Image (spheres, rainbow, N blue to C red):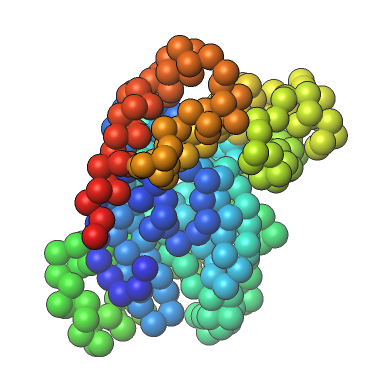
Length: 320
């Protein structure tokens, strides 16, 4: 998305599609997903504010061309990055092209600032007299209190402008002033922030789950067995269970079950309204018994599969 603006979403797929990074999105509680996304693209910075109503797991693959800094924007938010909760006032300084699991457990608001590695280095040298370069993997920093208050305030003000006063931010002088103030605050947080100590075991868990996600992409045609996955990535079932509980808050069997149901849901939403009824997708992904499938689907998404299929057919009929 370019420019500046704000949008409301009543569907997790549409919300996911508008995020600036490739994301595998999995809502973990039945109910209606709601979100608001606000963004602002300045000369050197890209700002984002996301507000979500449902707990979810996201496997994020960041692009190479930008460095991302992510932070919660509300005290009640539960933003968990690779198993470590990011507290209000913390910021996550992500590596280039990093892949990680980001989880929420309730209504959550989070923001991000992104810029090119070259501009980050240049601003670091100019403003802090040091090279500010992205770490090899995400690092949680605790900025000094004045710096973090300034960053959160300026980010919030910019997002309010994007939501309520787009004509103001279109003025070059206003946009440049917003950007320069944010760059000062961001560089101060990154250059002077203290890294939070994280247990090395969490990094090992993150490596195991990164292998799991990679392996899952090679089983799109059929659901893999847990023992097959463990063999493929070279870990015991006990180790995979420990990693899933630590990073995702659930057993690997439950995670795989939800991932499979999500594949069926997406297949239903894209089924041919004339020739398809979704049964083939259900059977191909491991559900041979219709009653069991319908119960599991309702428990996961709060509706029966026929309702998802009906929405897909309805939206198809509305297309010209």
